Each structure stands twice: as C-alpha cells, then as structure tokens.
Amino acid sequence: MISVRHLDVSFGNVRAVSDVSFTVAAGDIFGLVGESGCGKSTLLRVLSGLNPHWTGSIEIAGRAIGPMRDKAFYRQVQMVFQDPFGSLHPRHTVDRTLAEPIAIHGLDNAEARIARALDDVGLGPRFRFRYPHQLSGGQRQRVAIARALILEPSILLLDEPTSALDVSIQAEVLNLLARLRTARDLTLILVSHNLAVVAHLCNRLAVMQGGAIVEEMTVDALRHGEPSHPYSRELLRASLGYHRAAGTS
Ligand SMILES: Nc1ncnc2c1ncn2[C@@H]1O[C@H](COP(=O)(O)OP(=O)(O)OP(=O)(O)O)[C@@H](O)[C@H]1O
Ligand SMILES: [Mg+2]
View 1: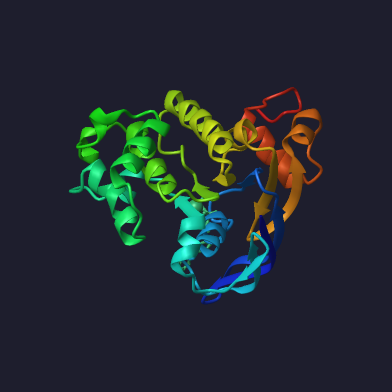
View 2 (view 1 turned 135 degrees about the vertical axis):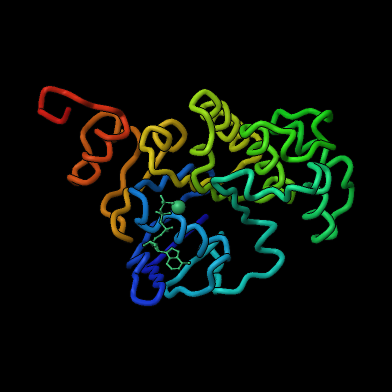
C-alpha cells in the first residue's frame, strides 16, 4: 500500500531524513520510533503532502506520487497530529470542523457522514455543536480522528496521536484506532517516541536514529527477543522501564 525508496529530506544543511526505504502492506499498522529530532514527523509530513521538498520515490497503492498532491490523494491519505488543541480551530464547532472537508470535496450526505464519524470515534451527537475548549484532550483527539476519517481514506498517518494525553486516556485512543483499522479497513503508520505505544498497536516497526532507519522488525520479534541494533535495545529499555541488574538503574 505504501512504498518509500531512498527518501532524503534536508532543511538547509540539516539532513532530517536520509536514505529511508520501507514498505507497508495493506491493513498493516506500521510503527516508526526514535528519539526527538530523528526525523519521524518530517517523514510523515512528506508522505502526507505537507512538505514538497524531498527526493526519492514514493508509491501509494502502486501509484508513484510526486511532491504535489491532488484532491483525490487527500481522500486516500489523511494525517492526525500530536496536539489536538492546536490542530482544531478554536472558534469552529465540531460540526463545522467535520463539515469542512465534506464541502471541500463536494460530497453528499453531510448529515449522515458527520453523525457516523462522531459515532465511530465514540462521541455521540451531543458533542456535535461543542467548541474545542468544551472538550477534554481525549475528546479533542477523537474529533481530530473523526475529521481524518470523514473522507473515508484508506491510509491514516498518525504523528504521536496520544503523547499529549493522560496515560489513562492513551490506551483508550489506541484501542479506538485498532478498532477503526479493522472496521474501516485502514492502513496505518504510527509515529511515536515510545516503543511501548508502538508495541501496543503495531504489527511491524522501524527504529529511526539521526534521520535513518537502523532496524526494522515485527512486534512479535520485539516481544520474543532483544532487538539486534544497540540503539533499538536502548530504546526498548527506556520505553519499557527495564532497570535490571545490568546496572542500567
Ligand atoms: N521546518 C523545519 N525547518 C528546519 N529544520 C527542521 C524543520 N522541521 C524539522 N527540522 C529538523 O529536522 C530534524 C527532524 O525533525 P522532526 O520534527 O522530523 O523530528 P521528530 O523525530 O518528529 O522529533 P519529535 O519526536 O521531537 O517530534 C530535526 O533536526 C529538526 O530540527
Ligand atoms: Mg515529531
């Protein structure tokens, strides 16, 4: 469903993504982990069409895509950002936020689509005319997910979708995403600095360091053995809070 080959992205002299290649099969939940500044968001922004300055090749559903995307692309690929407060317009109701993409893409049945989207993310009709400040962080992120889903995309790109949320709410939102993946037949890429979050939701993952992918593995392999790259092992210990006798505490 997604194929990235030799992707390079630079900001002036800073090489934010360097020679990154990976593929994601339809229906997979692919995780990208790595420390702050390693290039995760840059990679997602390129995939989602927000940053046209890259080299390499990208294919979505077998079709090569360039730096500029058409309307059809945005029906197929949607992104959810880390900060649900920042990504929702403070003076727009939930209704208006959800109605906007429907109008832009000229879709019919706006009423039914909005009702279904709210239902799908576990917010009933009573949330429809609220403003972002009248919602909790978790509810705001559900609205952001509903907005991403309203165009019925096949690919959802998630940039730290739960890291601004309380720990107790994080699992709820991750479980919601897992349910939606099955119900809506989605392919997901989940970016997180937290390996535990990625292990919870994903079936495959890539570990990034300094703009490059240093290791790729299945989550099963992660659970059943130590990752082979030293940086992945370090990340695993940090994320899972391993403080064993080896002197890491
Ligand atoms: N618009 C920009 N202009 C200049 N440099 C940028 C820009 N966006 C990102 N960078 C640089 O690119 C590198 C990768 O940044 P990126 O935001 O992709 O990291 P990240 O892995 O998402 O980090 P975090 O976990 O903190 O979100 C960093 O060195 C960053 O400073
Ligand atoms: Mg980021």
